[in-house]
Each structure stands twice: as structure tokens, then as C-alpha cells.
Amino acid sequence: MPADPLRAPHDWLDQDAGPVVRPYAVTQGRVAPSGGEFDLVAFVVATMPDAPPAPSLQPEHHALVGAAWEPTSVVELASKLDLSIGVVRVLLGDLRSAGLISLYEPPAASQPHDVDVLKAVVNGLRAL
Image (cartoon, rainbow, N blue to C red; front, top):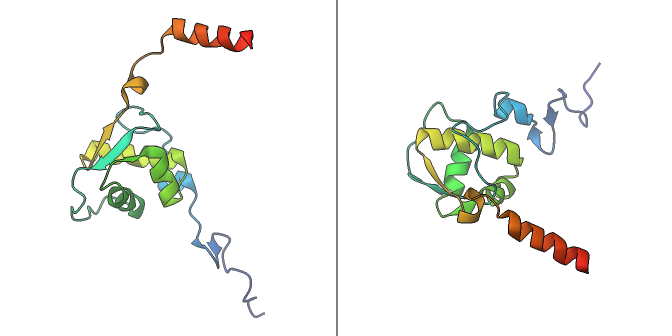
């Protein structure tokens, strides 16, 4: 029986989008970045944007390094590359461990919140 030209020969192949790879396949099942967590508004900068491609890195790693040649936030990178934020965080952890990027967190993200300020905000909202 001839194959239907409108139907993809495999479930993982989409004629319009090309091969579909699940996020857990890109991260090899990992859900947390190596080297610890970082804020979603942290700025990412490639330390060696013109470095030759390492054979152990995936195409998504290379795309992240290429997109971070100037300071870019983690969420903006996810948006630019059309990847989920969880995948981007894991891949950025790999790149940070390899020394290919630097992460700069905003000061407010690295400091604990002042409880008195939060209480004042809640009280102000209740007063409305």
C-alpha cells in the first residue's frame, strides 16, 4: 500500500516542523542545571563566542552561546531559541560548567527578601 504523502512516515517527524525532539531528550533526562540554580532574569554572556564547536555539545548548546554574545537574560534566550525555560536552564548549567558562559545575577535575586518590606506591601494592599 503506498504511503500517504500528507502523513509523516514516523510519529516523531512533522512535515512542517521537521524532527520533533522532546525536551527530556535534549537535556538527557536532567531537570536541574549543574552547578546550582540561577535566577531567570540573570544575564548570560558568552566568554568565548567564537570558540570552535566542542564535539560533546549539542546544537542547542551552540545556539545558546551564539545568542549570548552580548548580555541577554535567561528568559530572553529561551524565547529567542524557542526552547522551554527548563531546557535552557539545564543547557546553561552545562555551558557554565564548561566555562563557555558567565552568569550575572541581579543583586536583588541573590539577596533574601526583607520581611518588613513584604509585610508593609501586604498591609498597604489590605488598606485599599
